[in-house]
Image 1 (cartoon, rainbow, N blue to C red):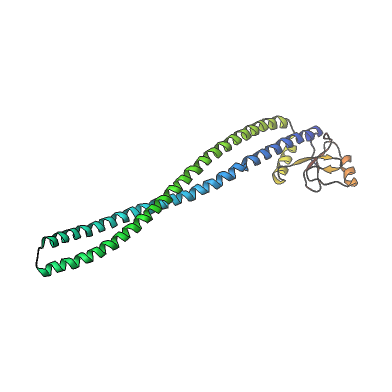
Image 2 (tube, rainbow, N blue to C red):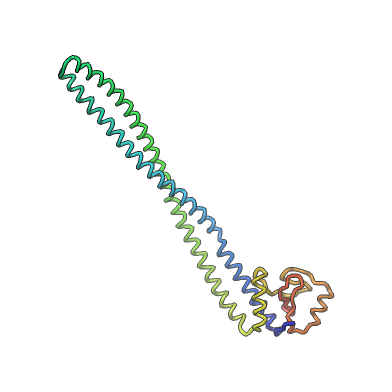
Length: 245
């Protein structure tokens, strides 16, 4: 069976404790509540930005529609004004004047229809501009929230990064001089067992998986040499004997 100095095995628990604290710190860093808020608001801004662009395009199209309607109405008004002037001046034969009167009636109906189109276009434009303004205001409000939340996230990250740096220094110091084979086995187990590669054996229990060993297994373990590396039968982690209870 592999061996490592008993003192090194006990010191390995200090390394394990530091590694676990670092793992928890990284988990907190990756799962800050503010991150979910930022993601939700960022998605909301994206949706609103799309709506803002869409309403801006719609408003631009409607402005052209309003302008066209105004131009069409003006063309009819100008034509009606010329016909009225000719009619009032009595220019032309009675038949010509009668034709002018008929044309003025047609122009009046045409103008009425075009003014209705113009009004509808103006109302649609007003609604589109309000939608655009609303989307823009919402984007600005959410961006202000995002700025605050980003500052909150960055502050939390700075604190956690500082904690991780401290833990990294502690880890280096705690691992100095440890048996290389013991450390290699620990790292292999830690990678495949949720970050825990070594656990204390306390009061007949593996503190890694909380399995209570039967008396026979305990006697076998205690009979082994102090430098023998013992593994938990249930979780395969290194079982460290002689750790302070």
